[in-house]
Amino acid sequence: MSDPVFVIHGVKNHHKQQYLEGNFAELQRALPGHQLVPVFWGDLGGNREYVELAVPDLGDRKQRDLWVPNTGPTPIEVALLSPPAADRWNIDGPPDPIPAIAAAAGAGDVGTEVWHAALEESWDDLPYLRSIEDPALLAAIGEALAGDPPPTGPAPEGLRLAADGFGDGLKKWAKQRIQDIEHGLSVGVGAAAGRLNQLIRTKILPNVAEFAGDIIVYQAHQERIQARVREVVEKHGYGTAEKPARFVCHSLGGVIVLDLCTKQTDPMHLDGLVTFGSQWPLFDLVDPRGVVDRFAGTPVSLPDTLTGHWLNLWEPLDPLAFVAGKLFRLADGSEPDDREVPYRTSSGLWTHSAYWSHPALPRAVEETFPT
Image (cartoon, helix red, strand yellow):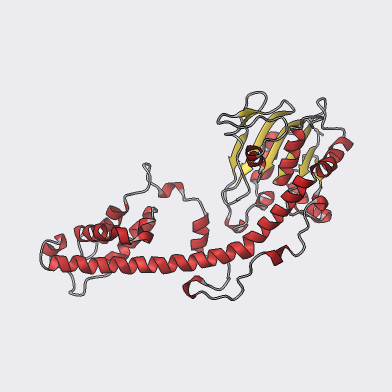
């Protein structure tokens, strides 16, 4: 069997048995041909007991349109937090909203020219409409306007051009319909924002609080936590220049391992690295680590204590995942390989731990450490 691969967890893993029987065991099942070695440090991390008491509780507080019962994320909330699908955008960027809405609205009883003029005259008073760039949503708004005929019935063909007389009245009616749409958007966005705020506070913020707790403890007790990691690696006879260690690292675990690898004295040697949900690129930017030079606009070289390939996985909705390719170069001149992990709806809105069950992770391990 080839050299072992050390697997270190990140934040929110404070119970060793849960880690061994949970995330670690799941990865081992996906990689039966690899000898995985668990590295556990979570008992040295932050105290999570009563963290939820520090998070503001909205409870049953009702704020008119801004409160909706907490029944989980709605499609609009998922859409607000999801990256736009590439095929929804034109090659040259989002469309000009006024012509886009007017063209769709012009399919009804009132001509495109009327809607275009009404939109132009009202545009400064339409903050919600002005903020929309999604072509599908712009078209849907136009279609909604097209489906609302004027009170006089279908307009004669001559009035579709909004010439004189009744054409001005028609434009006034069109402006009122546009204001109705604007009001509906304001109420809808307000309700969605209230739900999203509650979702963030009740679902996401506690996770962030636990993450912050582990970061604070690590920053204050780096030597103790790093010693735990080094102890496991050295026990198996690895981490030296002659026998560098191979690592798979989640979240703060990657920060610990890369900090060990870039230490001024007695660094740990690595031969290949897989990180997922990693903050080390950000931490190095704000506080350069070990022997790494401060970033000044061009990629900086990492020491030769890291050899082989660095594959860094990130997920679009993971707020704690950062990329490395723009910032660093390995000692051999190669670039860290940043790979996007596709979002899965089953992951929910807190995706920082979703990598463990995603097929992209074992594929990354197999690619970086072939058997």
